[in-house]
Image (cartoon, rainbow, N blue to C red):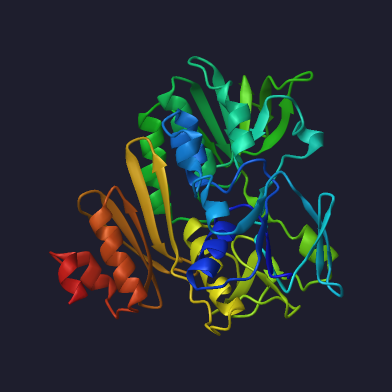
Length: 398
């Protein structure tokens, strides 16, 4: 019996497999993971795991014996290299695996610096997989000099961990400010101040000309003529969806693996979920790179494989831990035209578009996050003036 085959070893794949069994599916389920370990949580990699506060056994999503107990075949250290859509088979390592339905949960890959600017020098790292962090761990020694390239959340989290461990840290961002694509200027300013207060040097609006060194990185030349010495480098300049397998199989690609509202690709027997999947949004196709999306979409696709017929309605939420601050984000801030700031337990910044609340950034303010999340999910007509002046946000939920 062919059953359901899931390609990918991350959160979306694990959530999908578990949901299939929870919904009573009794057919064969096979999960093909490229990494040598069972599916695990990725967010703690650049935080608690890198700090040495979370061991591998706590990182994994399911206990080792869970897979066998639920009659799920988990293939680790196995790369899926080809899909034969006519024969309904996947080539995975030395195996040819048949499927009735196939789900692609292939995730995303980190962007690398070009080789021409030193991106392949020893001591240049990215943070995406367990092996990446294991390779970096030996570099994190007090007094060493870390250069972070990229002012997104991954780079900022790595910078925070490095400072907490006693390293000297410089972060460079070619754009005019950090978090330029994902957060308002007010949130960026608060996080910049947080890092400056802990001794991180942040250089904005200056590009990288090249990394220097013979064999191993020794520093970086910047576009303004400065040279930054470095013992190692972490590159955090974003990710690209892993679409190679889908593209080679002739599936429709639009910013990711194009799927309909149910999560089905251009081949009716093939589905996609998680970071790699581009689903219909209010303003065209969209991808979400988050744990919440991986879980929710993975579970929805599992249900739709079994005939549920439910459209995906993402409930976007994200978080980032930096020093003693927890940033929690609800909603999608695309196209915002107004920001309202509030001071509560911490700080919060509320995004509005055409008078409608669309997102909130809560900096060490869990109360603001929870209330904002509920208001957004309920499509509340709350106004910017109300958010700015309400003495008690909780009253707005009534």
